[in-house]
Image (cartoon, rainbow, N blue to C red; front, top):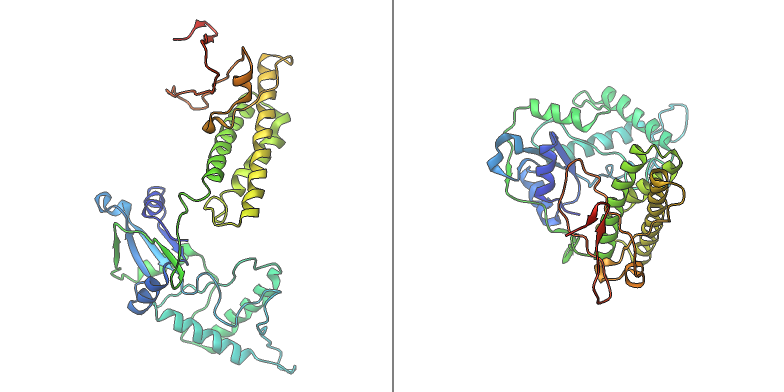
Length: 341
C-alpha cells in the first residue's frame, strides 16, 4: 500500500539488488507507463553512494496475468486446447493473444525483457491447471513466434538480464511511493498510526516471543516448544499487510486481538515453566502486567508484597525504566543482595 524510502534503504543495506512491486499511486503509474520509467534506480540516501542504490521495478498489471490468462479453478478463461483432432482447438489464437499482450507490456519498459506475472490472490489452488497451460504457452509461443523467447524465470534472473542491457536508468532520489491512491480521491494512509492498540499488543507479544525463545533455548525446555511455536505463529500472523497496518475490518482486528491475548497467556506458561526449572517446582505461576500503559496492574495494586522479575534477553547490559502502578504510600525495593537504590 505504498513503499517507504526507509524500506528501500534497509533492503539495500541487507544486500538486496532489486525490489519489484505492483501498488503505486494511479497517476504516478500512468505517467511512468507513458515515460517508460516503470523501472529505475531507487536512491533513498545519495550520501551512501552506490551501496545505497536499489533497482526498483513496478509490475505492469499489479501482480496479475494478462487479461484472459487466468487458469485457476475460479477463473472462466479458456484453457489452451492443442489437440488438432478435437473441436475447440484454440492454440493458435490463444498463443497469439498472449504474445500480443506480452509485447504490449514490453512497450512500457526500456529493454527487450518483460516480466509477465502469472497468478494472483488465492491462486494456484489447483496448480496443475496453471502449469499445464503455461507449459503450452512456452512451447507454442517459442515455436510459432520466432521473435519472442518465453521461459519460466525468477526476479533474480530478470535483474541479471536487464542489467546486461547496459541501460541508463532514471533515478528516484530521496523519495518514496507515498501516498498510495487506488482510485480517484481514495488514498490509503495511516498505516503507522491506525489501530494503535493492536500495534502495541503486536509489539509486546513480539518482545515476549524473543524472551520466551531465549528461555526455551538456554534452559532446554522441550516441554515448552509447542507453546513457543504458537507464539511464533501469532507474531507472524499479525505481520500480514492487512493486520499490523490496520486496514482490516473491525471484527478481523478483534480476532487478531484474541490471538494476541492467547499468545500472552502462552508466554506466561512458558515463563512459569522456565522459572520452575531454574528455581524449583514450588515456584509460583508468573503473571504479566500488560496494562501498564493505562497504569493498571492488579497484582502490584492489591498485594502488600510481591516479586518482580526483570529479564534482559540481550547479550549486553542495558539501562531501562521499570514502571508499575502502585497505591499511594511508602515502598521498599529489595534485590537479591539487599537494598536497591
